[in-house]
Length: 302
Image (cartoon, rainbow, N blue to C red; front, top):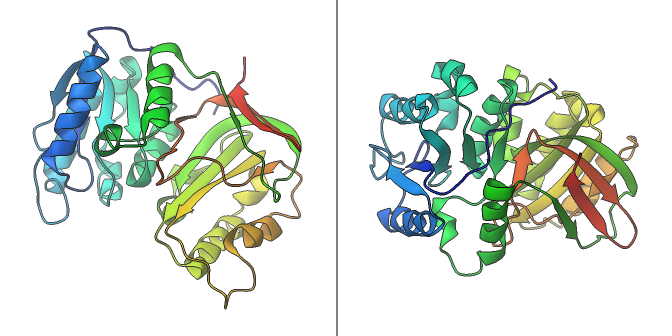
């Protein structure tokens, strides 16, 4: 799909809603995020079941659908801010109606399990932001990522320049950003939610997965034709994913070997994922990825 809908940039007094469409979350994180967003000049409300708990979730499937659909349909809301990930978005996908949000587009912010919702937004032609959530905004050490998020919401994405990695494959490419959490993404492989966009640049990250599981999920992407259909690949952080000496190669090297037959640029160790430096990435943004031997630049395609 071309011509993704980009919601309008935020301005002072815009209405924001904090929701918990997946797992339950400590109310203190919601309160901290609310204070920060209000400091940005935004009018913040908290959804009905954002602070709730129903087992590992913030509410029943029906309650979470109601919260999310209500936020999507409200023409006054300009930003849907997720409190955390966890698990649960996949339970909601088939019930969501995108008719109203296409009329009144608004930003969605989140990552991890929210990857599934980003994919749904993309398949419906709407851009969103893979970025730190409410529970991360006020954590110590997140200042850089939080600052970038504010810049994107109020001014738009410009560019990042990041460090090189010895496994990088050099080159320049352009395409639409998509991806997110590898486990969530791989779990939706074969569904309508992972149709490859024209010239897609895939980014992936994960947390707490065994090396063999990462290898298996990457093979799933390869065997399903996703890796061969890309114009670029960005490998983010695999937090708390221990290397396994019984595997034939370390995680990054096994991925590098897996995509050796393709010609597109590949970046390793990009600052995105379950880490403090979780750089916001605009899903469905047309970007240029320039991988050189002395720097890596990711910038908006004019």
